[in-house]
Length: 289
Image 1 (spheres, rainbow, N blue to C red):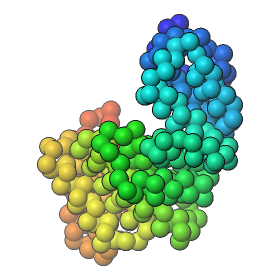
Image 2: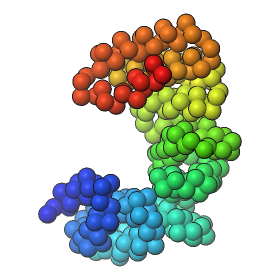
Image 3: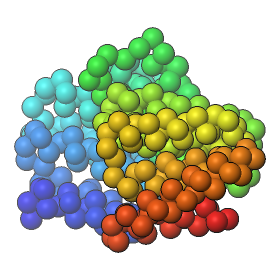
């Protein structure tokens, strides 16, 4: 089996069979024969062994094996990536001191990757703490092209989304939810395209709605729709923007505005391709809820 085929199969199978995929990863490292194989291998190792299994130290051991691999070209970008993924796993294992040895951007990225893993495992205080630390480290600014930007965007989005649906969310978690959504927006503006920016505004609108900040939720939904308008977004994207706006308006007591936004959302839904409509089902139901 080629490396690319192995990796694609591993990603396809990992959510349903993480233990099996972990075993494959542990016993198939010989497939990583080129320098370009090491970073994607380390990425899935960190994801499966961390986020899915919590086998933090086992994941670190595999990444250390990649470091010793004959395929390792010793280039800075390879060393940096392996350090980031190992650092995230070490953070998961509770070895916070290990992060001190990393370069600043790699440390920020490792903390953000760890936060996403903690979020997926419902380890809320660890997820919030890791993201808070990453954001604090990033406060002086991160240069364009930094490998820390995308992990920060992903971690913010993931934590905000997860906390929105947490039924027993505390006041501190609500505060962190809003901060995470704002961080997601800040860093998706740098890491992605208009599509990621628009969706980050939508996430912020939903988080603010969940927090009871209805006026701000309306403003964020309108920001989402403004990005859609500026980029001739398809009906699928606009549907979500109007659905969020309708929910926020209804919660704020603007019955007429909510009804108008809901009608627009329903009309947009009728123009969404059939094979994409299943993604809209929950939001469509909320319009009549």
